[in-house]
Amino acid sequence: MPMIRLTAPTGSLSEEGRAAIQRDLAAVLLRWEGAPDTAFFRAQAWSYLVELPAGAQITAEDDAPRFLVEVTVPQGALSERRKAGLVEEATRTVLAAAGLGRADAPRVWVLVHEQPDGTWGAGGSVIRYADLVAMAKEQRTDA
Image (cartoon, rainbow, N blue to C red; front, side, top):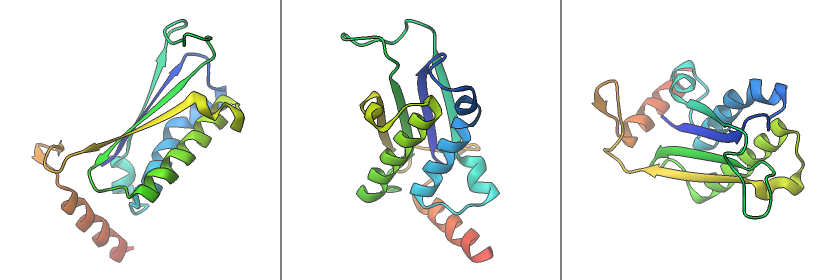
């Protein structure tokens, strides 16, 4: 049940990139989380695009666009290797959507927030990481 949110200045993404970025980032997150590629898990991967108005984000140096990717996952869902892969692929995905090259990678920050077990609720119930792992195993064997 991961979430991913990209905050970007309005106009900083290409037209094609803007159209695809949310689904692309959700797919990146699910892949690195190790979730099965099923309709259920795809429907649980929420993806947000927050576009800031002109002038709302600058640095002390310049006003070149910066991008913030925030990922929220259940604690324990991502090993250190998976976090590193997620950060790298999310960065490449944002750069591509903005029409930028690898040299612009420092303009993309990825923050991984791990939600402690027992503090995530959905559908009126607390969802535990062990429950998600069990659902994923069940869906893998059904496939």
